[in-house]
Image (cartoon, rainbow, N blue to C red; front, side):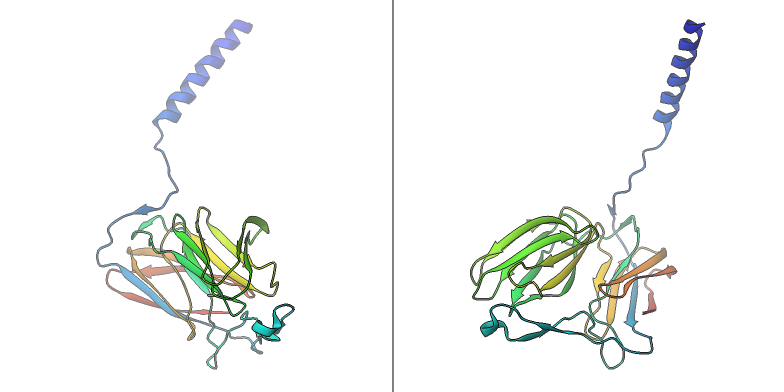
Length: 244
């Protein structure tokens, strides 16, 4: 009886291995392909609520002689037309398209603030951390979702830099132990179809293969938006309005 059961188990395992070996391998990695006459997405991000949120004023607690007594928070940068700056806009789960940019992302400690406040980066590219102030600054890098510290960098003098490779995707928060009011964010992607809105609340994503896509947006205070079924046609521009 036991021998018969063992034979059946071996037979079942053999069949399973044979079937599994015949299945195609599925990869979730982004594939760089030539994009000829791709389409584009251009648009704006606006605030449509009743009361436009205002930025708080941050109280400086150290190096006041250089930094000043107060600094803007840069959390809500909304212009007179209610357009929002510093919103990360991106295509979700795109699997193939143009090559990922090789340019480094530079974040600078300048006048006791991180510049830029929000940026996008790409997995495999470089992050350059720079100090342009005549004082000690730190870059304390955390994975924003779970607050886990990834690494800590100290820059002791003006003009000093440290370069790291971006090896993870997702949202990364930067702070400074010496100047705790400082904050910046880098949203890291494994594809090139991501950008940040400018002072006019505008964005553009170009060279997209034709197809149907979901567009995502992230703002540090207002969270995430998604817009589904955006049609991209060769040589055409889809104009989009995202609203918080």
